[in-house]
Length: 581
Image (tube, one colour):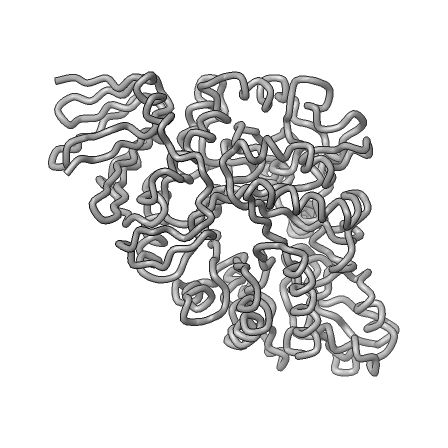
């Protein structure tokens, strides 16, 4: 018997969804994992200089976030993570901090920050601060003092190699093709930088430096921030005997440069000094190179951090050749299995360090951009783990075409280009990959409407607005019940109304299916079925042996075709069905 599920029935069901934020602990005690607000929340990442400009300087600011507070709340999110807004020379767009307690004036004042934070809290939204303490800016007062004398106490806040010992042992730099040491004549020594030469690494082996960082975190916790995102923190501890690494070691960068055992001593100290004393959580950027590394960071009995996010999912799509669905399923299934009973991870497919979600995992064609983005957002919001959504992905913003190196401002892109030139690489091929994968694709101004500069600014924006802003913007999608934006809003409410999507066990079905990603989530007596068509063709999957289909929780098409337990999905169709016992 053929059965068609209609959009009207879906909307009737969605109308009954609980609209309240779940910041309190869940009452259900059937799951093995301890329940808490930062697991149940949905996180929205804001890149502040690209979100909304209110003072006409072409850069987003705190007042712009305040202006858009109702919009942010309308998404159904519970947490906001904002990229760094501290005083900075902006060599790496704020990830080079010159003062951890001061606001860069382009974003506003400390009073503006306080007003923004109060606004978030008034809407029931938690705020996550980006803490960049693997390194500082070379314009930070600590480093300026360090460069005056080896006897200066701040000299020991950084890592140095005295020049009288000869050339320092090679260390790879992620942003500098010439390597990770730079010379300072005034102290006749080389300092270490894992990233750009303007970002000297902090010496976490120095207890005075660690205390400085804890005091900074306490400063912001007492202001009321609710969480900390620890940038590049897996690299914070260094082997200060500076052994020589084998040639080619940088190809396994995390193994050689990250997750030293001493890091866990520092994290336990941080937890005791800061995290355990405030109602906050902390998430690590990166999860080491093994599951054990990840568990050592976040398992509750370790008393270190609370959440980590790994890079395997985004690494699937670094080149235009893309990924296979079997690889995609394998990565997410493997990580879910590793954290099924202990620890907690983030679920994400994009952020400020990656190109746009839809270009890497979906289909940007006019016919399929909407359903494929809806499908990807359904995936993110139906997996176990805290979902992270990057600004603009809720409306399907796309990559921006930048075929020439002169178009780029990012230190990462420029460093890779210099390395390509130095190695004699095929620059046409290099630029093709850079144009596809550069993180600048994910940093273009938010597309609010069809007016000049997409409504981001009244003046010249710091970065060119994507030319497709008249077709892809908030104003258009806000009025369309079938838009990417409104599907995202529906999906956040579905997740909130169904704790099975947060805490339920995950089981992949027919993992070899070439087009459909099918899985169940089960919590006690509740069970839901998630069906996602990752292709631009119709696809079918036989599901005999499952329980009877119950109510449909969401569908990005008007109908769903089911006949004798065979479900036939339209291109990029995404549905979630309750299962009856």
